[in-house]
Length: 348
Image 1 (cartoon, rainbow, N blue to C red):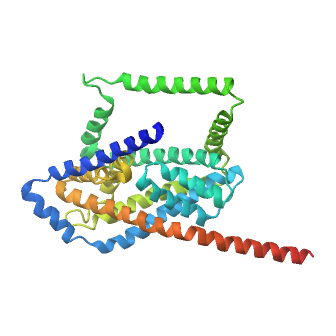
Image 2: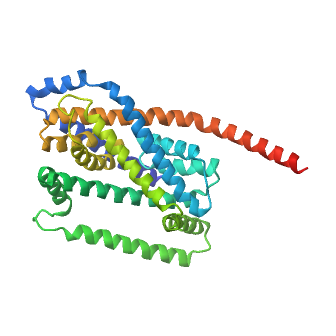
Image 3: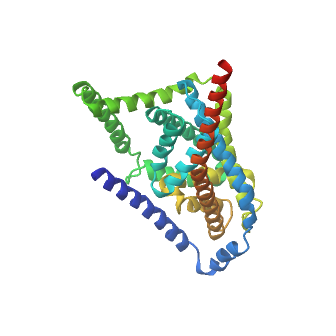
């Protein structure tokens, strides 16, 4: 009960941060620029949602394909359709409760593809690790292409995270994190050793074992280049979607691809710190466009439209996946039964 309350409070805190960033961003628009802000919405090219829809859907297909590859070394080969449905339903659930989607998509594949959920947890961890690497690569590209434009802004943000009030590097934060990790490992080892006969301890051990199997499964991948291609494909589609999205509003249309790289890097941070990126995505995108000479109000309008397009795509495709999942598996079961029946008859 306490954990549920804590999760709810945590969600409300991050949601509150997103709402605050929306309010704060609107306050940054000068009174005489509100006309331009509203004009960006009235003259926006909403038809561009169609190509962005297919671009982002392809990124989700790449994500499903990559997740499927992570299961192969463990001896499981789920259908791409079920994996895609699980990914999209997971995204849909995350809009309501952050991280619920990770649990739900594991549950879906456990039910329809008979892949143990505890092993799927490890593949989720591996996926997140590769996403972090890809995001780091996007940041490196952003600074390589536009260091003279966004360098000062990026350094300013890093200082706010790692530099203390005195202006020196904050070793306390790093030390606290390391100490907590060491304590957690020590406590877990002690619990596993002294209470190994308890069902809950065995369950926890199985989950951790599944996580480890999921992580190390990467080294056993038979198609490593396809895995790398799928990982890069996800972020390439994100980048293409961002760049095409620039053409949706006046003042941002025609911006070069290197600006899209920088915008994607910082806007992705916004997607992490608030539920679904509400407020933060548009704010960070606008700040990067501002560094590139685009007035904040026009950048925020474009960021808001891009965020809303992504939101609608998840809602639309998520609910379609929710409806198709049982239908697809019902037909799949019928085909399997028919194949087994014909196989028995031929053997007879």
